[in-house]
Image (cartoon, rainbow, N blue to C red; front, side, top):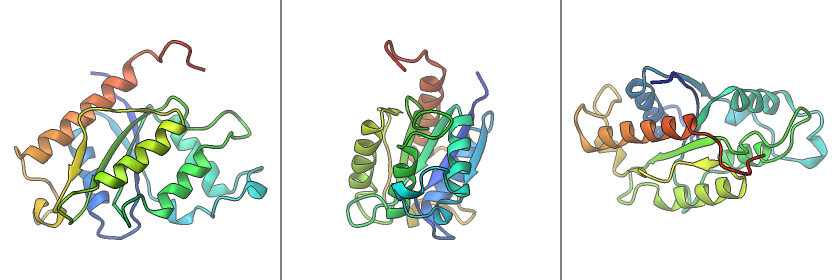
Length: 191
């Protein structure tokens, strides 16, 4: 299997975030890949077209790391039936052309996951996130979908999904699907 460079983004800024734990679990399950976790969403300034060129340093770093990655894995919590503002802000920055090229997520393979203590996981947030990624022309993993509900009961004391559980198997399948998407030829007519 090809060793890929996967950039991970957690939409949560919380220190003990279930979504950040989910990304650590993805890294453990996909240990044959190289994972690069960007933890600077909180450092990104609010998107402002007047400050696009040159891009603020934190934005330039995020763009560079997205461009260097073979794929991106985004974990989103659900806030008020949608994605957190910090994640949307990052996507707004990434949707804009950079000085050295087009939008960073253009045709980039992206996997979407999410964890929530609620009974429905992050179904509405993931729907909103997929809509934004579709508009940005990212190549999003369609199946499997990964929604971790009642996350506070799913992780063990070490912050891991127990071995052999359905959530762990589904997360592993999503990582495999992301890797498969990243190693496929780009669609016909791709820029």
